[in-house]
Image (cartoon, rainbow, N blue to C red):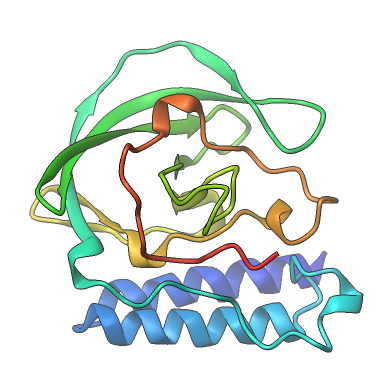
Length: 199
C-alpha cells in the first residue's frame, strides 16, 4: 500500500516539475530519466520483477518540438459507455469533450474521457499509424489525471505534448489490465514522438 502511494506521489511530483519547466525539452529529459529510475527500482514498477535487473531504459522517438500542440476543447454531453481493456472486463468512461488541434499543419481531434469510477479522472488515449508497428498496438496515453499525467493548459487551451505520450502498464506485463484507446481516438497520421514499444 505504501509503495503504491509513493509511486503516485513521485509521478504527481514529476508532472508538477514538467508543468513548471521553462523548456519543454529539458522537462522531457527529466521525465525520461525519472521514469527510467522508477521502472528500474521501484516496487510498483510495471516491469515484471525478473526483467528489472536487465532493464536499460525505455525506448523513445527523438524529441520533436512540433509534437507539442494546444487543443481547443468542445464540451460533449454523452452517457457512460464501456471501453475495451487489455483484461477481461471493460472500464466505464464518459466522453467529456472533443479536443481539436493541428499537428504538422493537419487538423485533428481526439475524444477526452471521464472515468466514471469513484473520484473520476480525465483520460486521453490515442492510436496512430505507428500503433502496432513502432508503438504499442493498444495505443498510448497523453493525459491521465488518475496517474498524475497532466501537462496543464496554455491560454485556455489544453496542452497535448505527444513527446510525453507513454505506453500503458499492460504493454510491459500482461498481468496489468489497462484501458485501450477506443477506435474513435485513432489518428490517421504517424505520431513519431513519445514512447516506442519496446516489447
